[in-house]
Amino acid sequence: MAVAAAACAGCGGASGSDDAAGADRPVGPVTMVVPFAAGGGSDIAGRAVADGLVSVTPGVSISVDNREGGQGAVGYSYLLGKTGSPQYLLATETSLLSLPASVEVAFSHRSFTPIFKVGEDFTLLVARPDSPITSCADAVEQARHRRVLAAISGAMGPDAVVFSQIRATTGADLDTVPYEGGGESMAAVLGGQVELASLNPSEVIGQLRAGELKALCVFADQRYTYPELAGIPTSVEQGVDVVFAQFRGVIAPGGLNPRAREFWVQAARRFADSPAYHEYVASEFLQARPAFGEEFGAYLAAAQGPVEQVVSR
Image (tube, rainbow, N blue to C red):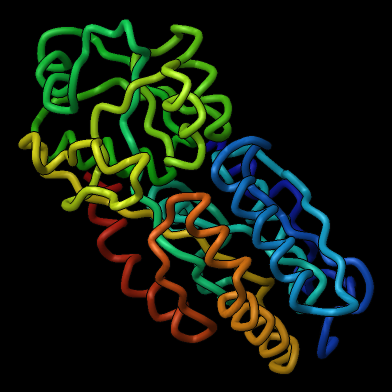
């Protein structure tokens, strides 16, 4: 119920926001809402996409507003209160699907306007170098005999889905501890509050390079081809049949003027065609699989069922 209560915080009235509601394009400063704390994967994505959209859209400025809380529900609820306004965007990911599937919130993916699926991101299971856990398979085996704490970003987010899949496929129950974003999760594992963390490559690459953390596996069926990650074995290689890619994307408030929706979709297309997009994808170790507007909406609709099945287990 705590998340459900948080989902009401920041909601506008039934008629939505009066911030340029109904306008056919943004006028003045635009806000990119990030529903998690600064420093995590969603924050990195939100800031990069905001910069990219500005670079291909003359006359538009976008600031980033971190509205963390409720495992992402506070940020989504804030956007829910901006119905019809083209002045707001939100850096979204799989919590858009997992939150409504697992707790009582006032929104679903259909409450918003899909703009742009940026790409897909497979998470890594990481530990400190001195950890006795040496692989994903070892983590599963040790969790059968003792309590193993693992940090996740949000109690109902993509990391929670990964660990739910581990429980469903192996019967091992790693004890998850939710934090508000990848930055807090990484601090927890570095500080020894937890043994493991599920983190995106972009969040943890610096610590891997510095030897401050070690990667136990990537939750995928194929290894990354990026040289920095190519040596990390997959969960499937280790006999842990868990594969999950979270998406990264951008949504706008529901009820947009169709011309405003098209304005943002076309801006996203220009960004996806720019060198800045490919540089961003490479720098964040994403799989470049863009989708726009209705195509992104269809992706969300298709992904909802599998996420619901995993979260409800």
